Length: 218
Image (cartoon, rainbow, N blue to C red; front, side, top):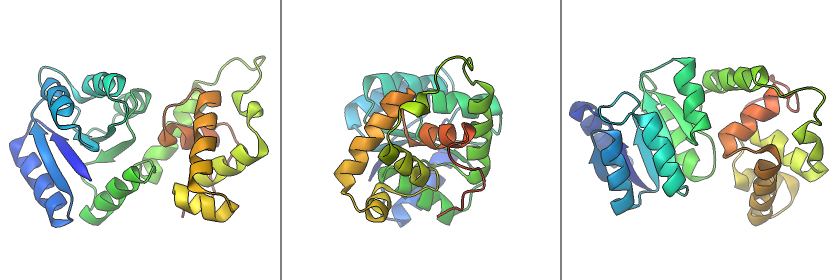
């Protein structure tokens, strides 16, 4: 995993870099604001960007939109102290694959970061629940056919497993299909529901009642 760090505090960047290196994760570059993050992303092509929100010149949310528009293959995780719902929801709408608070424990942080590379959303259960509530609030007109009604039985099965936090490999084993087939169905699901990543898929599933909020975690 090749990671780019974007945070306007050098001390924070140094601490995160040390933690990543201790876990055999390569830090390929650092940026102190959103525009520098965009420039470094173009030059370094990292797998993942850990993006702070409050930065000069260009904040992390705007930088996320710019980078995802130009380089959608790069996964972006917001790493912040902000617990504001507006920041959380805007991060997901901008295409971020995760939202992690800086008070997280190191072991959990590394676990969430590793999961993103495998296709898992980097969200704590509490933050995921708040996203679900927002999707429910933004529900479209009831007279319009629900997008999820267009999902096939297999796609609904995959949706149920996605919301538990299952990785593509685990979904494939559970359903007796290949990982490529899982990826194919996930692309179809996101296209039908007009969503961009697994974080949005999981939140949508619960908010629409497709998956009970009490589903057990994996």
